[in-house]
Length: 188
Image 1 (cartoon, one colour):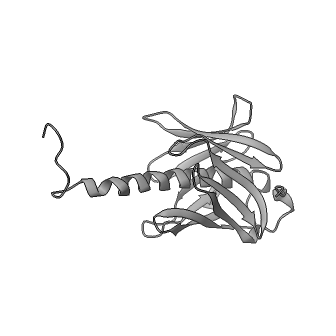
Image 2: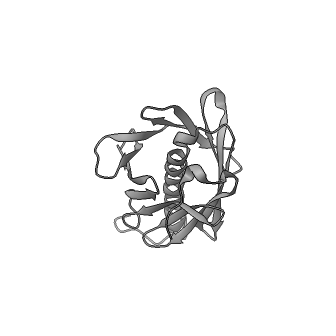
């Protein structure tokens, strides 16, 4: 199904749904119309590609001690956006545009808030689990969201949310191997 231009859609019905398991793929829908597809290059990796009606982007996590995420137009070297991972919030810088913050809505709710200048909320993204896996997410945008950059911000935000969810799944998978009932380790 062809991707629909983001500018022409009703943004009150946005949602991410998982459309493939391995490698992971999520599609952003406005109602039933596909707007963007985010596909990981391989299971467990951080490289991904996004397709929209306006073009294609590559996404990747970079750095070790000071991690950041970048978005580039397919085939280009210069990033068009960068998400710097910080304690408590993450900062998104869009080339030629604004600076935004992405952070969890609260400690008890697994939702995320995307805000701009003056802490104005542009999007609220709530992941929806299917068992232990991330099935998708609901996206609520405000009328004051920057239309020119909003799709890029939503794709980059969802990319971070999925990476964080994958890491949480990995930790939960390893949890049975900790504690007094864990199998003996060699050399211990």
